Image (cartoon, rainbow, N blue to C red; front, side, top):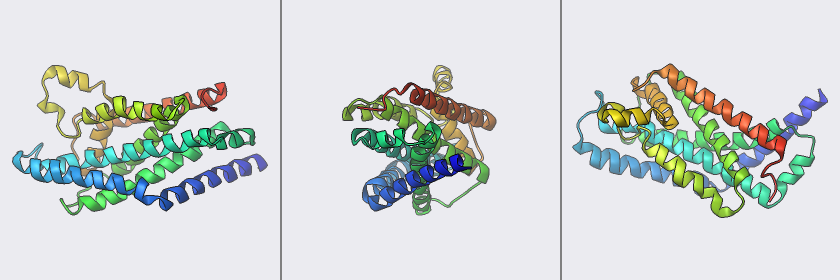
Length: 258
């Protein structure tokens, strides 16, 4: 009982710290995502979208809206954790946590919960912004919740892995610039797989972000290029793999000190 209480106190402390930080510097944590999403809606949805015929029976803006929101979720979650964890290493705050009787899984959950909170705040603001451009349509509430929370969790875990391997400040942007951003843009946010040539359709199946985008789009519009259960399986498998990877890194003590 005392062990469980210790873990809860540690987790609750880390979550409160992250929440206060996110709200206190909202100009840096929430506003940029909102501005970026608004620009995407305006440029790609309103200006360019008005010149494009419907996609799968929906206007172009309706079609890309779920993907744009998911982009904001992934970037908000990843950015929050990668910087928060790295600076905990840099300022040696992490060492204080490591010497305390706190389980590695509790540490992971504490930092990751901060990323999920920021992502869900961004999601709420993005959906409210979406209402200025298109009417809100939700076909499957469970799919919206599962893929929004699941995507936030996955990219928070990814941000923590990136922060562990990072040895200097410049290393924090390598993953997001050369891996995350290309996967997102080629993940079906702005197009349907049915519009691609066969070879590019085949290559798209190797992109994990494609399954997340399609699962989230299914929640709003009820359409998807692949099986919704395959999307659920891919997201669940990636989350499990990321958690195991992090626990192994903590056990090895790799990258926990600068």
